[in-house]
Length: 120
Image (cartoon, rainbow, N blue to C red; front, side, top):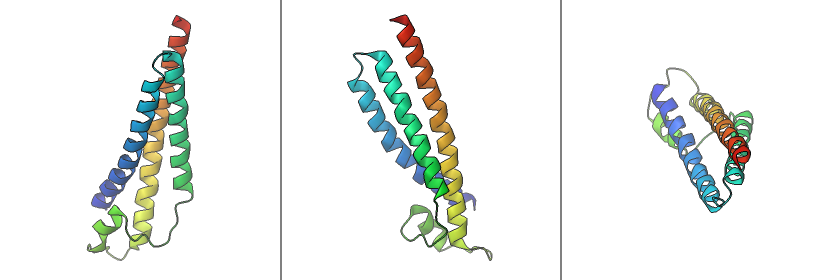
């Protein structure tokens, strides 16, 4: 189960990494106004957190063919447990974990935007 959780975390981390790259590019484009840049970054991080919570909420219990995590557990002995259920639980946990991290980052960016707007 530990390998499955690592694969699920890696899959969600990859998704979040590409999203964060886009957020950083948008923030860099708005760098002429730091308060606006950090405020936009905070709103986009909140959006990421909301999408991850939504994905965890609608996570199906059906068959997952083609995921990275599915390929990892396909050849392993599941010790009587349903592999689809194991993968759904692992992905759900990873979505919630990264949603919390995105919210902490959003709060940090929001705080920096408030400080930047006060200092102007």
